[in-house]
Length: 432
Image 1 (cartoon, rainbow, N blue to C red):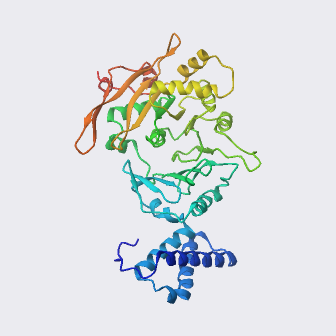
Image 2: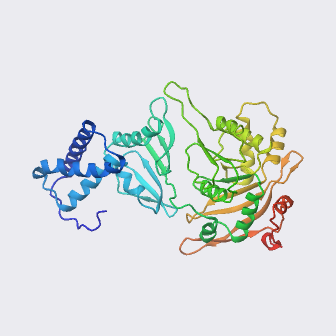
Image 3: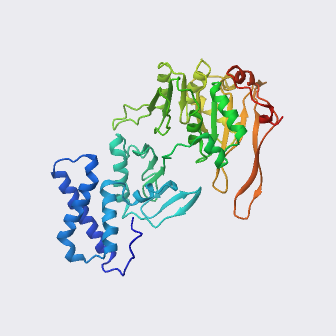
């Protein structure tokens, strides 16, 4: 870090600094290409020595101050061994999301709020070089045939990329950082995401192998909460996870992780979520966990839930539990099978036991705002019964959302399933 330096008056122009950086980066990269490969453990140190070596040959031309030298060396190190200008953002544990919109605009999410940064890329080509560095080890690509893709960084952070012409103002890079320390259900209580009574209820539902759908808007914490819930699964079960970019972090003994794959340049070799859900059914799963359903795989997931694969879980973008049911209908129709709407609704009502709906509130906090049972069909409608509901009462002078998560007083119809697994929940949990 550079904080221990006091920046003196600049002696060289920004243009000269840029020329020096480009020269040193080029010299170091050429030397590394021609020399014998070094191990990953030695790579950082080797690059640092080479930067010093090549700078010593030209330092008389530039007269850098101590601060400028440290700053430029750090930027070059990040450019060669890391992800360039955004490397420092990736290293900051308080930043949850990094958003690059062309070379001139880089902003972050910190504590649930968006903030501008002073970071800039040299030009769009510079952004594309960092994108290429992210994608190259993963066998994924973006080009004029594939303008958008998903990926993940080595630490598990999720990446979405879009390039021109769909990205009008230059390449777009969005990184949702992976939490190094896995949240526990107790920490969720302390953060106010759920209450103690809700935690006890949800843990019982997971143990009783209920099929659970986690819904919410973008960045509401769905995947994080899915990870927390999956942590309650027994160590004796075989769990198969299916994701676009693997980010679930399960510690059970028998976990099989699968990830989708983009087609190659010839348009072949792609593996979709739907392909993986179908394949998972042949892998003797005790539970199937799909990171997110977006399309026709919703129908395969429903059929899996209805054919003995209880305890399955997935997430879904939706604005409410009722909206989630409508979206499930729409996505199931994308499977291309001519299934009557009533038959689909019957499958949904039979497959889904519980919907946990999350929101990111106006103060940036993420909270479970509704826990809803899917009890049955009434006529041609899938009925829903709220078991817990967050009631917002106001906003404090500091902007903090105020309110209470309260039980509605209803006991779920699946209570006998909970009791059969030894979970006899107290009446007070449901407001009795």
